[in-house]
Length: 158
Image (cartoon, rainbow, N blue to C red):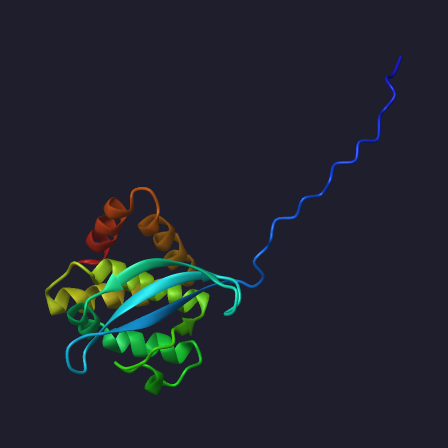
């Protein structure tokens, strides 16, 4: 004997979905003179309705060590290098793969003082495939982020 099936209507509750894809943007934090630091954020959605969370903040000294990497990421994301100035107020949007690679470089090089070691880490991350950068990004942002960042530095050091 089968039980009769009741037609239950469950009200559909739709959460406000954020349209668009994940991306990255960074803002320039003016320093002394013509120096600047950066705050890099991960964004979800389009420019007008984007949700953003800060991923990494750099001092002017840390930014100066990797300025060539910044210019490369800006160019690959379709901007002119001239948009990156110490007086810029509006955020600069990056594509997802370029943002992931840039965040990985910033997280790996942030505590390093030796210029040669910074260059070696940048070269190692730039040699990674896109999939590999996504893997390390998820590790370096996740629960054991400090351990993953240290492991990445050890992996890429000579």
